[in-house]
Length: 180
Image (cartoon, rainbow, N blue to C red; front, side):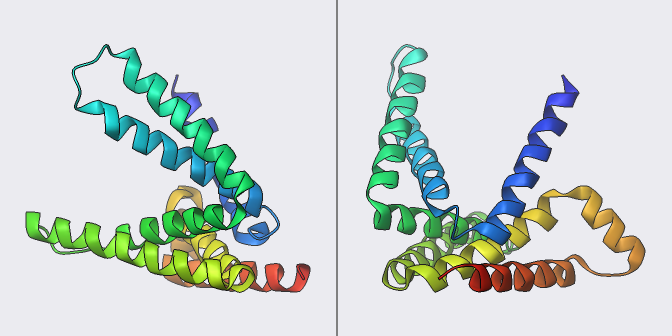
């Protein structure tokens, strides 16, 4: 069963590399995935506190996930907003904030506000913002989730943030040079 964890990690790593270097070209797929995640979250949040049979929240989350994935794919700019929102909010959420309940609220509000801000800007300037968001977000996800990259870089003496910056710059350059 432990091997499933490693298989999932490898699949995520491949997706993150594709996101970093081909984010703009993969935009419609990424947008659909963001819509799916948003729908699943909304569906489960709407039904979680209700006293319903256990299968209802699962079915509701799955139905909303599929509906929002299809809508995001069809309504391209809404999907661009969702993708930019999720990548930005997750990056901000990964930042360290002081401990405590009040700081947790501040952390959540700042993450959501940053996601909304970048999402709105991404809709206005789709290509450059999408390339920047997917290049930086992909690089952060690659280094953050690839333990072996962290281990290799620590042995070489490069801090993770340097590797992240190098990957982000390379990903952004590749995307700008290979798209119109």
